[in-house]
Length: 317
Image 1 (cartoon, rainbow, N blue to C red):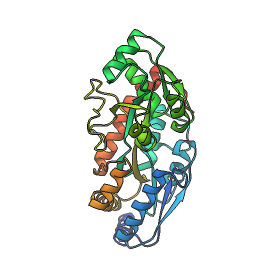
Image 2 (image 1 turned 120 degrees about the vertical axis):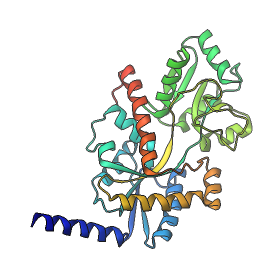
Image 3 (image 1 turned 45 degrees about the vertical axis):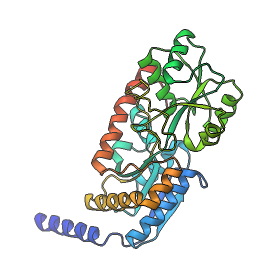
């Protein structure tokens, strides 16, 4: 009887997977309406709905660094009809810090597919007497504690990247936290800050106007929009983990067949020429990869950032 019951459960699960999706799919977005990241979620979601043959409904649940949206999806029915679209760095930092949440980012969410990685630049004020990353580091060594480096908050990915740079390069740039890049950029333009990380969408107008100087791009490859700007590694600073990725997640027990199908659909969508070009125009180069590789990349970030958080004795709860 037990064997028969297990067989019936397995057959029912297989039938549910084969008929997926059998109703609208809800994508909970951890960004507020109107943000550029929200626009990406909606555009990819619309294409995903066309591929699946069912409507994809986008709901915005911002706040708590993305953890409000993540918690809702983590507790949803694991049948592929509830998906999360969020910044991967928030989940990585929460896992690395072992934050006191009502869900576990690693245990309760399954990586489905990455969409792309936001282009992040290390920028300085033009009046600072440096033109390369190595010159910035040399200047910081010669002026310990006097180079002010802004971030979007204590424990943010930008803050943790700065601390990695300080440790690897043997410098002591001073961390100045802000509530967001939009508050920090005016201070940089006014000359009251020396350097910061900024997304391309935030920095683009200032870079093009020459009012800020880009020294390096985070990520493994150069940004196509600024081909002359080297990556951090190319500029002589390898091993700094800073990935502002965007991706889809599902509840942890979602059947692997559904995860595989969603990954294939999203990968096809983001690599189609029109979508790829649009994402590039948003400063988000597509980063297609299977769920297993996506999970491994996130785990690498957890390992690196956990060491940084523990070394700094940061409390991020």
